Length: 311
Figure: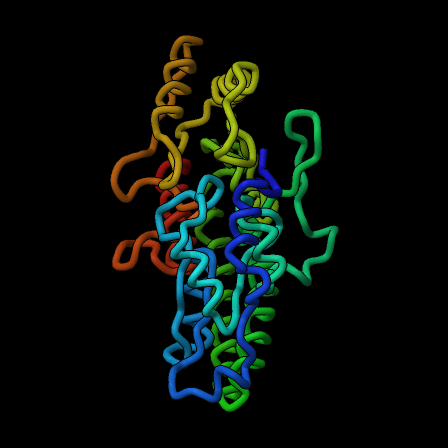
């Protein structure tokens, strides 16, 4: 289950004066020869800012590419990045669970303008939890881009026209990505559109492209797999003759191997798609220089992997 906040971490942030520091104003940033600093929580936002502002800003990343944001614990160096930032951007929807209080005080959530009806909620352990993985809904991701663009234009008024032009180009690229996804995913027969992953990161994707999903670990990687959830997933795989199940770059692949063993024990057969470069990218982009190190390339990487193994 996604944790909204961990008190010990919050108290640490407060004791170090993070919230009180806030961020410097655009006027303060403009008074120095240095480029403004934009601190972001994830590789998704790092890529987003680079697409929109390019070299006009210095981007500081808190959670390194390839690490699991659900489990990430802030370091003292992260506090420095937040304190010195001219602008802080974060996902919101409790994705950065252990940092949420400090981020709400000092930053801007790119999800702040989402309509309640567009936000996916799930039942987990008897209560409703918000699904933070909105980036798999390209329409929502475009809204997040527009929020980031607006904040960057406030920070850099002299570069406003360039940022807006970059924004328009990027939004058009995202529309092209959506059309490409639809064309590629159409190669998978409707009866084969089952996406089985370790944790529930692909609900927005499923809603966008007509997939059925199952993830025995639930919406957060910070939860245990119940035996009942595991067996329910096994039954789904066996009944629907699902060809392949997928590991993710930020989760333990052993869980999917155990799922395969349980399927075989019931007389079924399934392939685990895993190995270097063959994991789905869910909670992070790939490290710089690897396939999937931008949002668009991440989505294409995932789509190709699904088509190759499910069609």
